[in-house]
Image 1 (cartoon, helix red, strand yellow):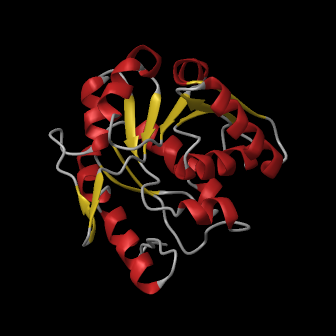
Image 2: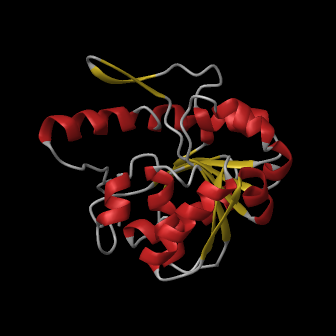
Image 3: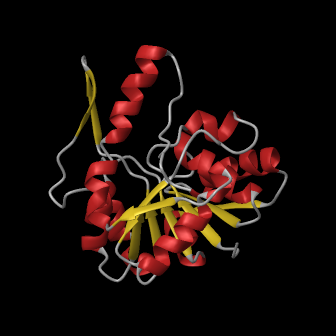
Length: 219
């Protein structure tokens, strides 16, 4: 597997922290990005202590500028403004979106309608030169952080329009599951994959589990 410098924008949140930990544990150089550079550095120290490797922190723009792969692990609220603010840093780079546009009410999680179709497609529209790939939507943040070893019961589904970028992200999936991610198709499929996180959250709440997705029928 090729080694990358990966900026995790939103790395101070549970999903970003867990993915950053897995990437760092596998030997990639990881930079935690946050609006607050001090908060990013604090979280980087926490991850570094757990992983036993060096992890750095910086403000979002500096983190994205230093990386060749940028992970967007942020809430959908404010997503568009954040992407626009980082347009120069994201241009031409592989940008992984695990953003899930979800709302919550008394009945539980539900999908938020996105004008562009999905958060990943919104990022692609806002930064046309980026190589946006949707992936890592369905992996439990707690499993990423607390489970020892690969998450063998889960698959990472990958969707994007740049096949080379898809291949890179599918290889990065091995840092989580111990095997390559499954390339599902083009970026427009993100509008199908993102809402499924709400289904998993509902399953988790009802059955008191941390569920994931596994695809059968593949060798």
